[in-house]
Image (tube, rainbow, N blue to C red; front, side):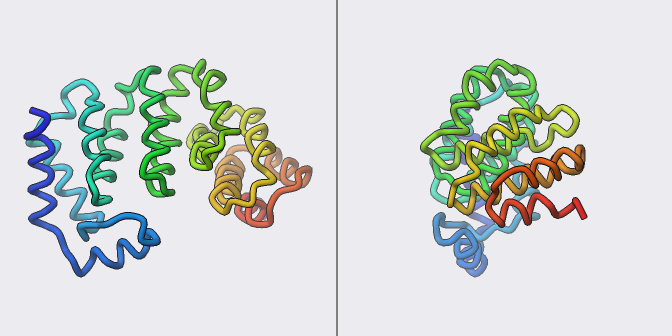
Length: 223
């Protein structure tokens, strides 16, 4: 059944590929990934058809499906894997976190990492808080820049549930980074948390030595 599932999606995508749109989409991602040229609204329609026809959302979480989509060349397949992950978030278990780590560190770019960190990783960490100390703390100081970004962003949607101490700890550990994607993540995380606790974020920014980009992004809602 696995093969028929991915074959159905491949057929839908290939039938709707658009070479004219593929090139600018590839260029937008700095040439890192080839595209079929299927824009987001149409892709979502095709994904809906795929999910309806396979009824795969009614089944247990299918890691093999995600793995197979991740292995395909064109980026739209990874986007469908992300859509599937988001729809199956409530089915994810603690043991799925190493797989999320693999996804973060494979075919890595902001488009996939920024979907995985605050959604599936955030959900797993919320349900099984032990993984934060066991795993995510290590990501925050990892050699892999995308894991560091994921650690900074995993609480992005937590609002009042944000562990402020941990958020600030991760930011301090990465404050000296010259990486654009780390500086941007710090700013994004602070900006999002400032909607919940502006006074705390303002005091934190004023008390830290942060990159100008991080300060600019983090202060957007602070007035």
